[in-house]
Length: 185
Image (tube, rainbow, N blue to C red; front, side, top):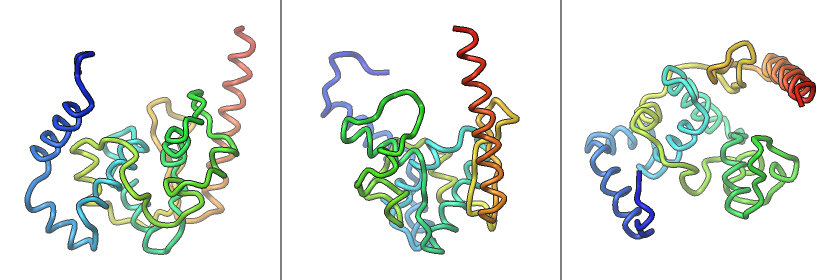
């Protein structure tokens, strides 16, 4: 928590100090063993932070990111699309990603551009940094929120066919939820 009097410079200084307290010296070597720079690890961890709601899913989300990077497939991560929209002051803050967001020409839009965005999309915690440094070993290329659970869990897939089935299940759940909300109004 920060007081209202905290300046931007103070905030940056505190964040850098906290990062230096958390980042372990051997993590730089681990990043190099993954052919990544510390900045790329932090950027990856920021995506993990925004995408994985459950601690046990962080290494799995990391594996999806690395598998897609290895195959030169766009990451297509909603949190980066949202960040790109926020940077331009265009995010609607209603939790929905619109076509205009997906089409936004920004290097942070991982639906359009392959590879990692140019920098972090959030401030990652230690568990996300650890996941970025120690991804699960999987062949997963996709994940989508599990509509059968209300805790932010995801289903993971290694092929687009099963992923599309998962996306459709989520869309059906969202449609039902929207209908129920409209009835209550």
